[in-house]
Length: 42
Length: 238
Image (cartoon, rainbow over all chains, first blue to last red; front, side):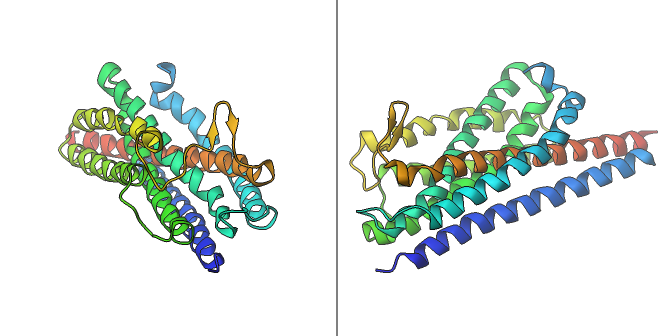
């Protein structure tokens, strides 16, 4: 059995998942901080 | 610990720490992944599939360590009512759940060529699946309490009780007959050959820094949201 398709699938899930987590956490942090700054300035 | 429970003091440290932990995570993960995929030999028994080790073990460690952190935050919330502890618990939960899910997915993918099956209801796999369900339960409970304006004490209690699952996961391979291999790395050393082992510390530390950075981002988002809500409430009452 060729193991490489399994290895590639596992790495895509973890590395892709990590990139997606960073993008989600970063954008939600930036938008929340921007909103907080805006509300405080008003 | 008590000194850092002040949100302003925490933010002063968290802002640079978010970038630093991410900057440390990326090269460590890349070095470990490249080393594990291209510069280690195939295992004599498992063949090429052993390379999944370098991402599966960090995912498992962070899935479990995440709940450990959540349990500590829950304890601090219940005992000292620190303002940051509920925020820390809510920040850790989705990140820990994601790593627990990645651990289950990569373990399943590893199992197919190694054991000949995608899934087996044995002690280690089942207790890890329960951990994922615990995370989902915590997320649902914490957000429901937050919407009702509660302090999150029920979620904290759930976080503390759920920690019972951690030793079950850890010792499951010793307590029950399981397809999952026994402990390869203990405090006494490792049974993994050094030429296969060296990328693992790189991905372990790399993903741990990534986890820390993600939790800091989530905490900063929660704090900013709380600041905006408090300000809007004050504006409305004036």
